[in-house]
Length: 318
Image (tube, rainbow, N blue to C red; front, side):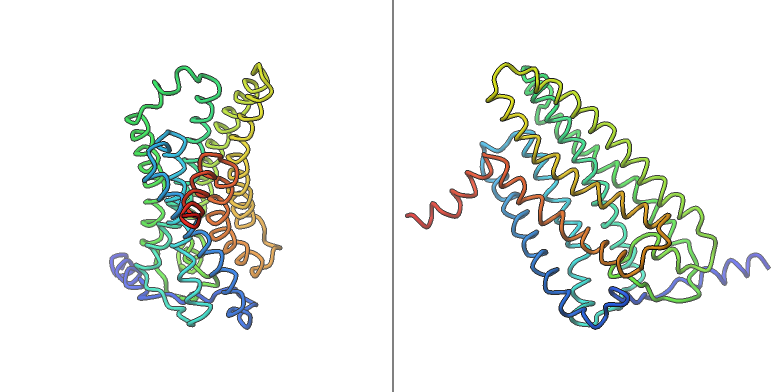
């Protein structure tokens, strides 16, 4: 009988799901799609220009810019995983997504999130080395070390997210195949299963929280040491320069972690928060940070600002 029951459950792997968009705002989908499309274009252009400049310009082949190019790549993965499908739902009523497609989207969504978190930690370490031990900076952060850090970041993100795919794949789906969301997100999909999903809930909550909190603690330690070092710098000019470099990084950290923590907490405990607000917020979260990050770095980092100006305006002057 158990054998039969197992066979019965495994046969309930759905062929596809229906993504319903933003519940309660269906009649505004066409209009909501317009700002999302603009934000997505800004993200593509901004991160694309950053990657182009960092790749082509040898003066930008420094540790800080290698981390920045990784952040731009992770941001491109994050917004491209979700926004085009969301626009398809809003504008073309393309609500259907296959089960493998859903798992793939889920993997890349969570993978790029953990990538972002680890890259921000790498950038904090880079700033710590540059400001607190400038003499050892180039000897510690050699190209070889940076490659090792990058591989470590990718491996960590991959190994944290891969179990999520298998935790969802093993679930039987015998009830509704309708997801009240614009993209496949772990707990949202797991909740449709007709089986116990407590392991999904705990893995889906504990692992991100532990990973993000450990990253945040280490970032916090780096920045307290950086601030301590900055305020002991002899000249005011050096202090301002150091604070300006860190300012863009801190802005990006806040833009990334604040909504992430808010979203995780509302998912777990916010039963009074309306689904419409939750899904809208989840959409802004995958679209806005990838669009803002290159702008913040472009405006705040002198080398990038100069290169962008040269790229666009020198041609016009010729």
